[in-house]
Image (cartoon, rainbow, N blue to C red; front, side, top):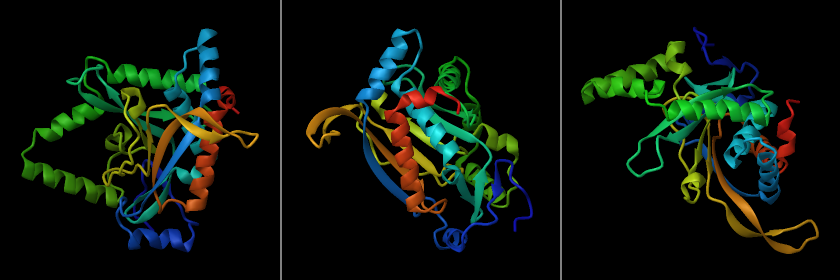
Length: 277
């Protein structure tokens, strides 16, 4: 039993024996990582978003992906867990981090922003929250994470190494101040990378040992691929390649697979996301 409570999660007290032992057998997040790949048919999704835009509503495929992911995390809460100090915690909020390029040029820097979502957020709510975060990331001033990195980069390497070591020790014993966790993009439910917006194929991405993000969702560029339609015929459709990396210690593979099936269903039927129910 931990001596101190965390600001971002509650200890899972009734975790199965295997869940309690796994963090001791596999202490690292990347040695516990499982990679999954999918290609989601999105012709209907793109049509729905196009009609929404024609009616004056703003919506992109990235908005729909994030809204579907938020809804999945709300409906499948075991996916929103993390391991720290070799203990399993249930996260208290749904938070996603994603990269924002300051400008669309090779020389422009990339920053990462973190956004907290409500479990009942509709697609419109997600669009509003995401656009606020993108505006913050592309603003003239530095983001919270950029200010923290600037302060860290000020120290000599030996001092910085010691500071980060102390950070890990404090995090291990649940002594890390809430102020340092709140805006840190790697203390989030998941990190999302939209490589498709840059015209890049989807990679398999590692998890981060720093922080608590137990999920990584990567999105590639839309491509055409053969799929089997409802009549059993092979047809060529537009698909979205996605990859998931998740920490095997937070939930079993069956629960994760069922969760990702729900994500696929929501993304293919985005009208469900317009409701808060």
